[in-house]
Image (cartoon, rainbow, N blue to C red; front, side):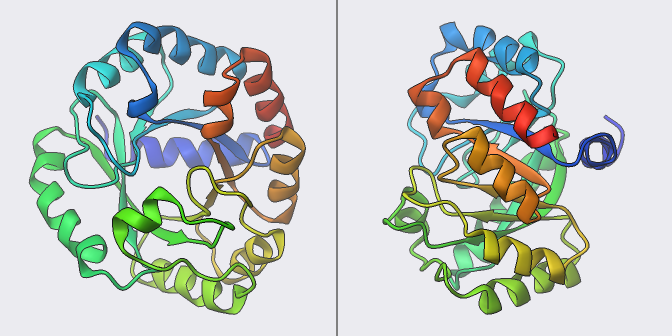
Amino acid sequence: MASHRVLNYFHEILERHRAGYLVLIDPEQCEVATCAKLARDIERAGADAILLGGSFLTTELHPIAAALKSATRLPIVLFPGDSMQLTAHADAILYLSLISGRNPNYLIGEQVKAAPWIQRYALEPIPTGYLLIEGGNRTAVEFMSGTMPIPRDKPDIAGPHALAAQYLGMKLVYLESGSGAKHAVPSAMITAVKARISIPMLVGGGIRTPELAEKKVTAGADFIVTGNVLEEDGSLALMQQFADAVHG
């Protein structure tokens, strides 16, 4: 794979549309037998890429990733909760550093353990500053990482964290309120962070309707990520509505 192929593709999406739409698949919620159809539906709906990963993994990742990759031309991008969530059946990996927390294991520890396998699997690493934002309830990522989220009413804290990610050379910033969050990242925080940085910003967690997705794009999100809402519904029509709302 050419260097930066997926990252360049993300930038092309932003040139083509006002924002991009990514669908997150939790391997714990996806059976191998149904993965291929899900991948085809995601592509047909107009999504731009598939993220694969979760906070905690007890199932086998390789066959799920292989089934997804065999069924779609969309990039498969790993969104790992730790260094164990790696597979060669993907195109790239969000090389996350949980910069909103102060747990060294998720700032650099898991990254070091993952690095040789990323190289071995020839995955494209996309350095990403990951900011956990308070979402109204305690989420799996908060519990598993042992970190506190940034308060949702503190954009003055989120902004400098995102800027630090950019200054450290990261290529993306990801603001997330967590899987199953009651509330999405506040629009005011998205706008404040966007004003600080010049790298693309992903926003996910708690975005349950296309109308809300559109509001987050208007606030400044470059990519919208949905996951749980599709596990509850999973319909092609709903994904199409999200894609249309995000792309504008």
